[in-house]
Length: 148
Image (cartoon, rainbow, N blue to C red; front, top):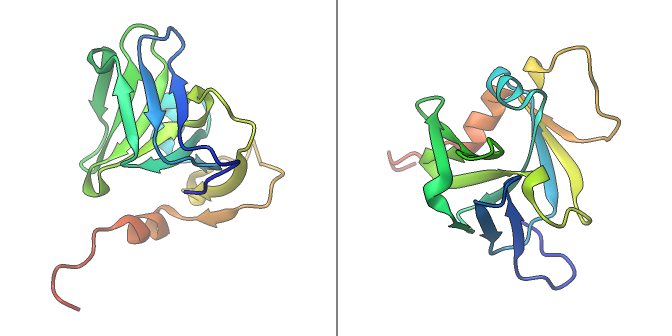
């Protein structure tokens, strides 16, 4: 997470405004997930900011959570259907839809994950760090409690 312009928080919301959120540590890096589930869910690559645990929700009663795998769930507004976040259970980590944030002016597109699942019909012009799904899971895996 990178702070920008002395900001201490960022805000966002769903389309109808029933769900609002505050990211308490400013982030400016956007990533794209090309996995089949994200593309099916969002209609294209899912563009996100990684806000980790630094998020507070207002209107949480309107958030519908869908367990899409053993390791994560997807959250959306039950009133308007806006995709809000992907939540990774093992790290208690939120990846919030970049388009749901109110101020996107300082964003930098930096990372693409599940690059091996990206279909051939689109490419981004930006130079980004790319990772396969396997590389991503290795990075996000909880530390080995075996003592090494």
